[in-house]
Length: 268
Image 1 (cartoon, rainbow, N blue to C red):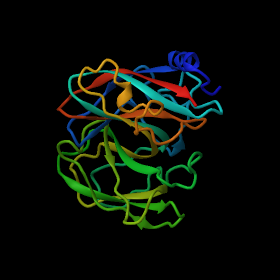
Image 2 (image 1 turned 90 degrees about the vertical axis):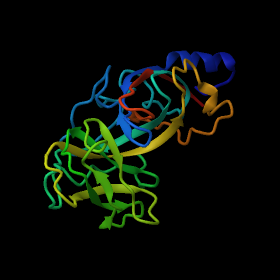
Image 3 (image 1 turned 30 degrees about the vertical axis):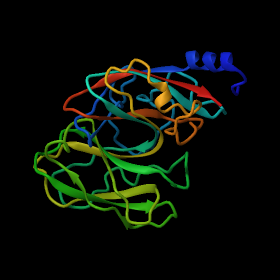
């Protein structure tokens, strides 16, 4: 049901409020995930599978957000944190695991990533590394072979840092930079490390679409108007599609600063 008046707006906001816990961030430019946080902690991925609102780990697993025909929008965030944070609301489209950080051979374990079921043309779909078990302390770089938004396979990403402090910890996310001119990813086929990080660990690739961004400040109890899509903000990018698997990525500004709180949605 679309918004018809302020009472409808308030009712929708009260009905669809999702609680999240321990969205970790380690430094200003480094990212942590809610995927393995309470109340619906996701399991460690292995084989390549698609994700939807029924996937354990999705913030919206216990609600109807993402399963109706409505266009849902983020409308508020209530946050408690020891430091300022940037939160990205994403739709987790597919994931896999079982890659290791102690080999320089191209890795295809559980790859390619599962075919997209939402945003199937790959436009503005991003790819990231999710660290599932601590990697080695030696810093190196990695590249991935992927199929871009035009269906061109065999593309190679730009190198990105993996291993070593801030790039090897559990729950860390590393964004994968695409080749010049590419605007998205349909699938990732392999991963190659330039050097051995000295510990195998476990990491995986996940594909996702950024839906919204919020910049709540330290201990902000209610900071909606900063980014409210309905009240003049400019940080909601995409509607939430049926079947969306919602997850938060936290970009904290200080070491070891988890944030917790809830987010609220309405349909337009």
